[in-house]
Image 1 (cartoon, one colour):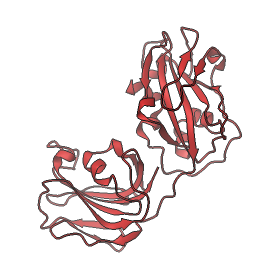
Image 2: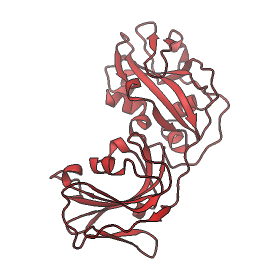
Image 3: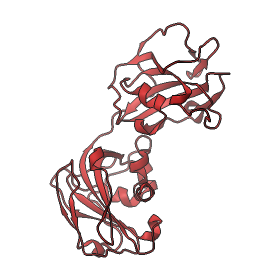
Image 4: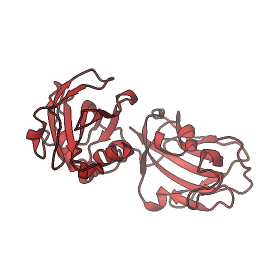
Length: 308
């Protein structure tokens, strides 16, 4: 089922559409696509924002191409390009109406309506931008598009729950400088303002260490947030650098639930604007096997520049 939704809503599952990309001009109304007459029989009974709606349609439902339209219009404000929309969805089998996935129990999913989404999934982007809050949108995809048996259409109904302008993203950490205790890896900025980590003399951690180097004054990070950060990571043994957004010249955005445990646990509760030193035991990183050049205990410096 994750394969299905990864095809239908890759940005919802990965949440990589949050952050990055410029803001395109807003369309006045949402746009349908495909053979929309196939969705004429779809009826939705709203059950609020915490429970999946009732979904009825003539069975079997089959489409030859991805098809999308608003099947129940809400009475809220129209969603604008560049905003962060929150939505919940339920996926059902087009043959028998059986529920395949229901994310209402997990809470709404954020989607930033930026150029990254428009380029990666224009059909979804065009359907959401201009639609009214409270609307239910039906999205049907043929089996050939979802990796299922030919003719086994998948139907997804998603509700547009809220929309707001994205939180501003800082260019660099801002806040009060904090002097860390002795015995930790040390961090200095080079002449380009990029943090460099020195692991000499640092002991192997017996537990996760999440030490502020700069204490930001922004919002506290929640476990459900998507973060925009700059970071650099090195191995505690040897100090070899294995990853750096600074070297790539662009920030990274990710759901805090979708990274290693050391990041999830270490960054929750930290504040926007902070620079955080993470010293992560291997069992909260990539385990004994490691991943690529990242081996054993790891050290990161993470600049928290924004959340959504």
